[in-house]
Amino acid sequence: MSKILITAKNMPDLDGVSSMVAYKELLQELNPSNTYFTGEIYQSQPEARFVVDFLKTKEETAYLKWDEVILVDASSTVGLRTDFVPTQVIEVIDHRFLESVNILAKRFPNAKIQNENVGVAVTLVVEKFLAMSRVPKEKTSKLILAAIYSHTQNLSSEILTDRDVAILNYIKSTYEFDLEFIRQMFEFKTEYALRNLKTVLFDNGKIEDLRYFRLSALQVEVMGDEILNSKADILQILAEYNRKNDLSMGFVNIIDMQNKITYLITNDDTLKEVFTKELGFEFTQYLGKFEGLMLRKHILAKLNSKR
Image (cartoon, rainbow, N blue to C red; front, side):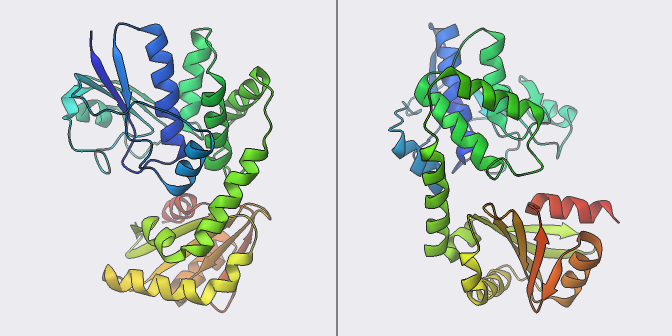
């Protein structure tokens, strides 16, 4: 009998939480002689905690020592817990292509690597249920739905693939779901962001290299444009983040999932020119606007591809 930890990165989002819970459920059914634990789902991002509490999700987390580790929605050692070694990892399930499978295989030499182009990692997990003619339990299915809606910005993001849609429709067909909890999830996420702007922006802040520049890239996702009433405060938060990290430029990306509009806030003239000429943003002073959803990672990828 083996003790196996299934974990995502520290402070996981809904994709990481749902992937952990769902894969543990499947593996425990298939291999009942083993003992499976999830990573800490209760120390997750606020939106994920809201859904976990709302659904009254109960999971036994890994307070015991384990023999092996499975990574879901994670394939880098950055942001992972530090109480296991890479050679303990026996499987990696992720949906990022920042590094090749060969690099991941060297990082985790004993692991089966699955890194595929889907919008959410939990899609890959649910496909395993289908392959084994299994159905996730109802509460797990709700968690999966929440992850898909959340991670694809209410099904409006360009990261949404046909495979994600197929899994979404499959989950919806298995139970009678009232999707009111999805609306409540997005309302919570928006209200939390409005009440805790600095915390949300700092927690989601990244330092990126863009062409010849090193800059900050902050992001927040909300329903509606009420957040624009605080755009002056957001500009000050951006300035504080830059001072803290010794940066001279940066931007805040605001995703309005309700109106399907992307806003950018920056007071850097160079960035405004780049965003206008190469991505089609229209600026009024320090606020840029783009019709459609454009995530931070897509902004950076598109600009870097234009070198």
